[in-house]
Length: 239
Picture 1: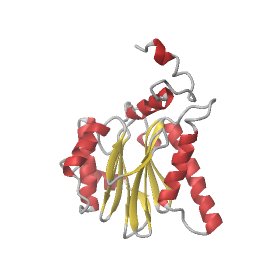
Picture 2: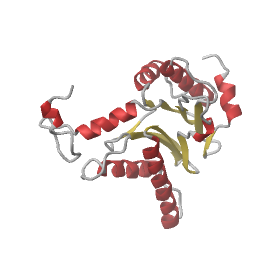
Picture 3: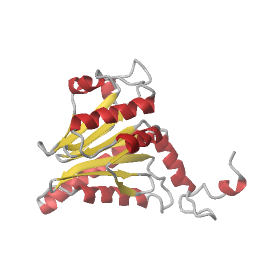
Picture 4: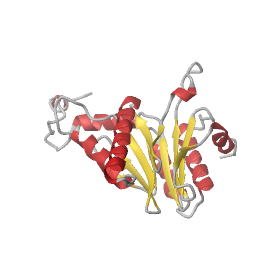
């Protein structure tokens, strides 16, 4: 039950509580925690993004749910939280990537794009009349032969990880990564580890229709989403 002191400070995004908290930002983070689980894993061969799409009705077309997006040839994004908010940020990211190509005649740097998105999300924590984005993103790509993996949250915080997770199963995912992650693994091993983490987070409630996988490798240098057949070949393996 909300106490009277908290109620007085959670009505506007621009008002700090006496203990230095912005409740609307914290509520946006809770929206992310209720979202589907997404994981990102960086290894010596590339980066893997895996998302649980959480299909709750057999009447729903699985292909209509998209949680992994290609921003540019070398950049991909996975989301958790409010899908509409994620789609708006993806559209903005694609515009930023194209602006960079037109202005400088070169692909945008992954860190630069991640910072631009983080800055944009942060602006919605300091002005009235708008709410924070209720979504978190995993942003991955390749720059100068180096693989990068970033995480943003509704506050605009930007962190770089070797392996991480967002969404409702984050605690279980991070626990497994702390115990079993190694940078020297292959892409196949990274996908297996990611699926094992999702298996823990969802209590085994996923199949080929509810899993989406995106990869970027040094050989191709381009981000792509795996086909249903490729995903099935990993799902059918024992976790």
